[in-house]
Length: 100
Image (cartoon, rainbow, N blue to C red; front, side):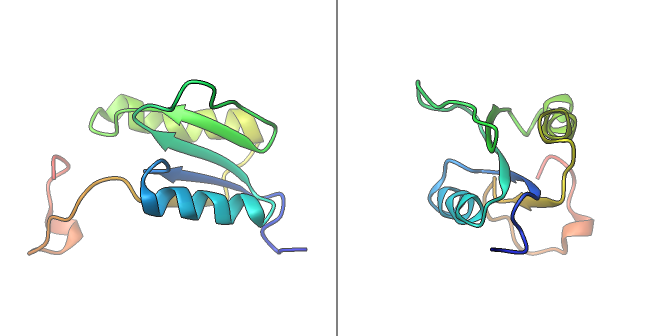
C-alpha cells in the first residue's frame, strides 16, 4: 500500500496531457483527488475519491474557492499540484505579476 493512500490532492490543469497522467497516478496510489479543469466532458462523475472541479484560475475568487471545496469534500488537503497555465520565462516566479 502506498504512503499516499487516503491522502487528498488538488490538481490544477488536470484534463491536459500531463495533468491527466498525474491525476491517474495519484488515483492509482489510492489518493483522493480534486481535479481542476476549465470544463469537464459530460458524464465525468464524482466519487468518494474523485472530485472534478471546474474553475477559471484567472479569476481570483474561483481559484481561492478550490481549497475550500476540496477540504469540504475530503476533510483535508495534503498535496497541491499546479499544472495549469503556460510558459512565461525570463524572470523568477516571485517577480511575476499575478496576471502572468
